[in-house]
Image (cartoon, rainbow, N blue to C red; front, top):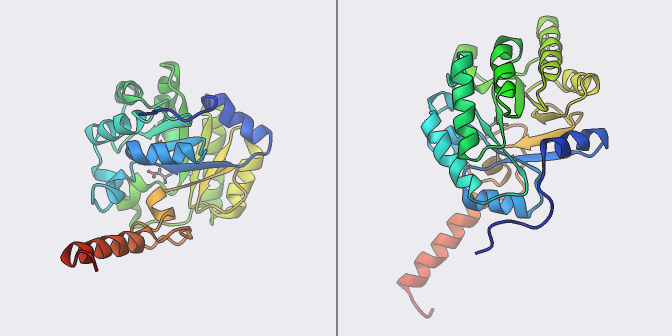
Length: 262
Ligand code: KIV
């Protein structure tokens, strides 16, 4: 079985260069071998084993219940696809509470096959980010709506509408860029603030529900493919109705085995 798609390996520098060239960066999530393989074959340069694993694979209501052991299992599966894409992984809830936790868990994700890690927060986790980078593991920031804080926040809210949030987002983005993060995911940030951050920092911004002014866009792949009809995500227009197609294909097969030859 062929296990690696053709072409040069995408590096952290290649992702940064895309911003410098004004090339948009498409990024998607994957949680296993086949989807990583398919996204890689489709030429997606950045694939994230996201902790959205919680809702889209494991059936949890939010990301707070995903463990390191869940993430390691899925990162290993995705890494077995040996993607040409840069393979990043989310650090799950509470896995980077202290600097020691952050380094230990980032190393475990890297050993499992992640080529970069992502964690939520800006200035509040700067010591952890510095330590992760110090241990040689590339880091992606995540600002705006932080899904691991959804319970305190009481839902998923757009960030950057009020002055204090706007200022905090700019300061967090500056701090992450200065410390050496190579990209920042901006989730549910107003398009005005997301565009401002994108122009202000030298590293790529990758938006999700943050308008078209970011350097790249990331989506949760099952949302894009219409695999989860029970979730409605405002910022995603699915390009496929996979749930319906799966149900139709299965129903046709069921009818076929009930009435062979018809
Ligand atoms: O876990 C995830 O899927 C993410 C996306 C919001 C980018 O972090």
